[in-house]
Image (cartoon, rainbow, N blue to C red; front, side, top):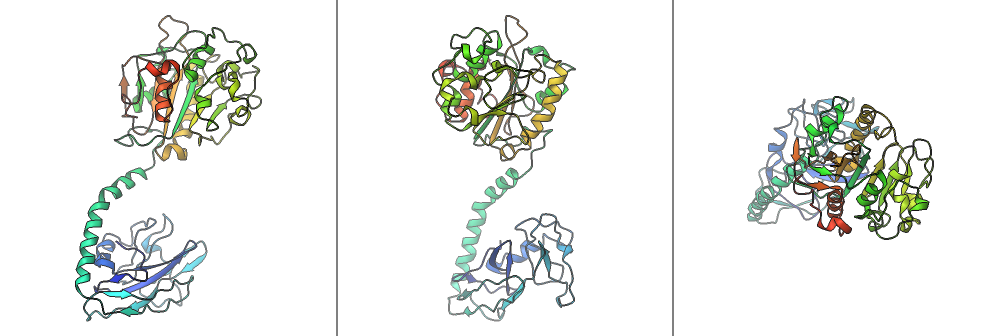
Length: 433
């Protein structure tokens, strides 16, 4: 297709023989209509009614000149007329208040044979006429055929890449966050949301319409078990591969934990977003904030990074860390309020994640799980897997645990598995991650 023309390029002799220069967006580039004879094929697919996209070609009907739209909402038919514009139809358009007009800078004699080599090219300023190119006609005509053969080879090679890029540029809708790609991309970000004390009975519950929609649209682990009771040892197991002997929900002052965790594995590239926490890395339960639901504050090795990375939940969400742990307060996590309350909170927060640049770039996986069930012996909880490559409605019956979630996350982030995660079943393959 069209590409910048520069000194040393060969230009085949094919009608229309017009080259022109455009300057826009702080860049000054030269384009030609006739490189490799592809121009007519491009613009025939465009019309005055086609919405221009960045990098596409526009030409009013009957005009030998084309231009590149600069905004996604510009149409080929939207080119404004001007008293000083004698072209038919007019060939001016406006970008950010600056009128940019393509200029003919050299007409090639259509009676001549052989390719022309560009021996001089000077970029122009906005609205300033570019002086004509000087053309060298001494090259052998056989080089023209070499250029055409090279173009065909490049077109064949680039066709699947262009199709893939087009697919990747499609916006993922918050209501359909999964099934956006058939093959797993490279996931660079993992987000967890931990809910509280609700077992598998929440699946298909009329009190949880949003969670039910996630189960329909994304993935659900139907044979997933928490580790123990009460809450805190589950959070410690999830983040370190072991309960570390913790059997209660006491404050960090009672459990100063040493040793590695997924947080320490990531150095400074992790973040905990904690709803209703009064201050960063707060070590004391107060109000609707519970330290037992914020595992990072229990690891003494994180003292240097905790206040910077363990912060109150604010908006817009900051999801640029490799690993983000989101903790709702004790009402929105369903611990102290009805399931419907937590479901409504998820219906607000999850679309924000899906609309984030990290998710839209197809580099983020979101896991939603519960720390434990209501106290039953099986300790079965549902775990929802949301990612662009997860097939819609995928239900996985493989035996999984919190250690499986830790192993899967470490695998996605290229970290060695900790503790019991080493022998746990990974969730990557069953969920197409």
